[in-house]
Length: 112
Image (cartoon, rainbow, N blue to C red):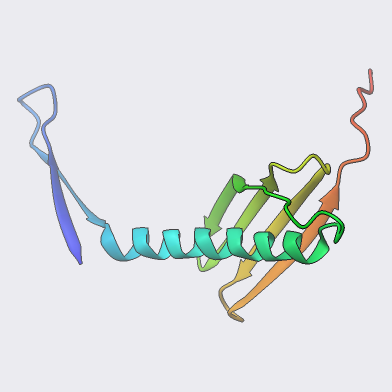
């Protein structure tokens, strides 16, 4: 579905700019992809939680994301104090998701 958006320029001597945007399908697809990425990490965390803590509660959230052509990449973290972060990638050509789990061990300043 295409929607037109007319924008008036401050100087009335210039014509009105018209821009055509795709709104609904791409926004809906983006939300679906966002939720899928979060669910992948949520499921991974549940599978790797300490079994002695059955009442572990946590949230997952997106730190950063990017879309290039049909590919998506997310950096995701959780509210757990475990030092983990997750990279989730969607390969649009193969219709596959990839998950990389990382643990931060140290943050050092290296002076030049």
